[in-house]
Length: 437
Ligand code: ADP
Ligand code: ZN
Image (tube, rainbow, N blue to C red):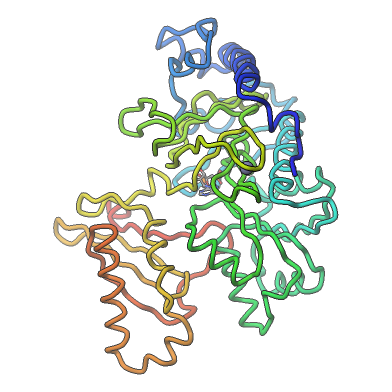
């Protein structure tokens, strides 16, 4: 099913013509209404009129997270405060949060795009949606909420946390759709089991998970434990919030980026050069329709790749692969680049382990050290009465990490339910080198 048949299936040529028309408008407006853009365009000697084709986009300077921080809180707004109806902020996962604003029309567009996401996941107005994304400054809760209402489904605005109560609601209200971070979905499944609830026999059938990186292995695990189809949703507050891109139920491979509202590019994060389509790099977004907070060539620091092959669902919008991680989450261990999601993929292949882990990076002398703490399963823990058994499993995992990623890690198995659980975005990495620096 497709929510907006006309715009989601526009033939490439018509889509690009629409993008160009909108791009010219947004560039013109940003230049004349936001001091930052005027200064940054003038510095490179480029004028809005120089944008004559989509290729000309790459002549424009990037906008970075630092630029948003420098203009904190409202310096990047393109409309007066009297036109702003909502403020949100990023979660601040990687530093000081950035603030974003929306006009009435921006909220309207966002709701439409979120409704597209639900329909792409096979959700209809007869569904009941358990929305466990945090409500508040974080865009997840309200973004999903407005989209669900726009579709006409019934929303349970449960927000994050209070996990035991969530289990009761899941049993009593019988929602058919759940939205939250993937790590929280696992947390819920575990809590349910601990309360003696058969989580696989709830009425849930679809999960829409995002806001943090997760692996294909994690998808399998969630699908098994909750007996649902788990789909990936991508977004960031700067560009809009959840609903910038969504995986479709038919394709289940990569998320369609709503290209009538956003232009995506991939660049080499080191050089800033555009990469050939399909190559892995940093995603850069330009918003085409946002009024309050237009962003031109925003560097997301998210690493992914574009999928160019057509999708069987009929949408013409390009897809992006799972986000491997953020460039600022990338660990450099003795010169080797590693993303936490790569470690996760290896750990989740090991059946004796639970999908709860933490990565601790430190430095001893001049050498980086990598320690991976991971919980063993209840059943393995009960059987493993000898230290030898645990040690041999630790060695096996260590070997896998070395073989796949090329680094030596210290693997420390810990008892079930000892690592901290997430209620929103999981904190996977503790980098003690950064704390000391
Ligand atoms: P913050 O950068 O402070 O976490 P946001 O709350 O706006 O701010 O979160 C947006 C970020 O969350 C994205 O830039 C991306 O790193 C991450 N993210 C969102 N959806 C996904 C997803 N489906 N997979 C991986 N990462 C995601
Ligand atoms: Zn599709």
